[in-house]
Length: 227
Image (tube, rainbow, N blue to C red; front, side, top):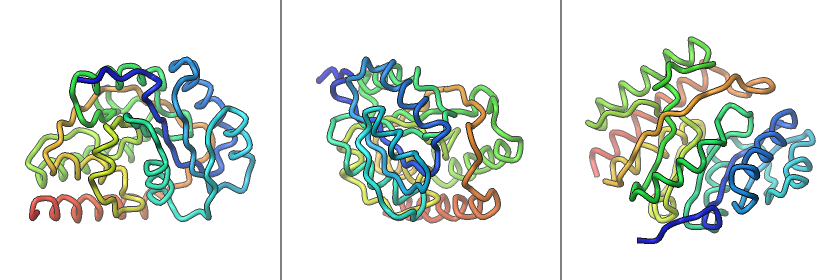
């Protein structure tokens, strides 16, 4: 079996008005991967985010802002290397976990999903923590398989997983990116990670976003069970 290295890794993210944080995130990726990973940002910003990302070595694809799912799906499709890691650009996820995620892929897992709730949610607001625990409970019942964090933004995938599935969700893409591989029988591992307070203001309305995510979990889970 192929042993993947940082030269086989693409790190992708959707970016939207994250000038305060994106440089730090990209510096951390460069540090932990020795500058060998491909970095792809799909950006709909009207601030300096795309310029900062390019200055830090990322490939930036600019598009009109259409939401989280459209941006991340474009980034996933653009990634050219055999292992793809998704993350957010707000400095909430630990880039130091990237080598560990790559090790788990080399341990033969198809998907490695960062579990923020294992350590109690760390800096996650209480409302978000409770909501995420409920999302995980509902998804576990519907998928008949225990999952702990359905909406994490940090995961690693073998590229064939991304290529073999049609992704349909926008706000709920983070849940879909876990549930569809699980429903198709891919080997999924949840890896505990820390989670930090975001830099800058959140762009997601908690009520509208929560409703959209819950709807996606129900729709995707039921469709996967009926396949």
